[in-house]
Length: 311
Image 1: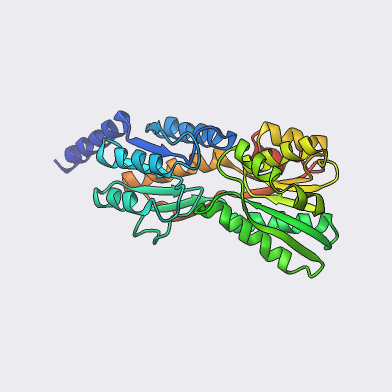
Image 2: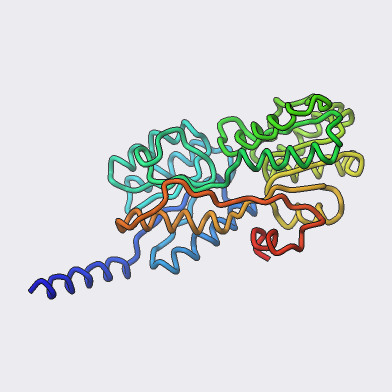
């Protein structure tokens, strides 16, 4: 009898898995190359684990209200678990708490949410963004031999991931008395266009600077375009964050000296894998570092870098 009950229980479990848990994956935005890679990883994990992936997020990375509405939709709807990259580390706390109260596991990925992992949400899956900022700072300091004027172009207020990168970068700058950070309080905004405009509004400071750090994909691309437009592109040392076909091409051309690249495909995969494990009562890690690497022209073809870039 016990064996029969065990078989019936196993069959029910298999049927539930075959039906496919519904995992809502909510990015910060849906236009950047980074998020398309996250989606690819998430869908691969869903296919392998027999879970249904519902991909939905705001178009632009500055639409907090829309992202909150999407989370609320899935909390009230039929999603079994939520995988979320919060646009704001405070504003998304309330809808995440509502998911917890409905016993829907939430995995936070890419960018932190204020709260206690294991209590307010199940797990945090992300790059060590502070370390990424340190990598960028160390490379930039090396490129200018520890002396010169530096511009930091920030991304957006409330974005925990980029704030951690910027903090790590500035910590390295502070260790070099020969380096002066002449701008550290300007924000690029959510799109390539706003980043380019912000860079153009800093033209006098950019002319004065020896080197520049930009802390995400759209910010870096906007800065490249502004420096090309003004003829400053070969005069300045630019270190950026994230990778895309445009940015890798700029690196090959010499317009960028280095990029700190994340592994968004792996991030999407591991975030979904963690959410499914939480749903199924299987063991999972509450903190997962998905890794990052410094990419330069010299190491672009190395196995380590190719593994992260997915080529």
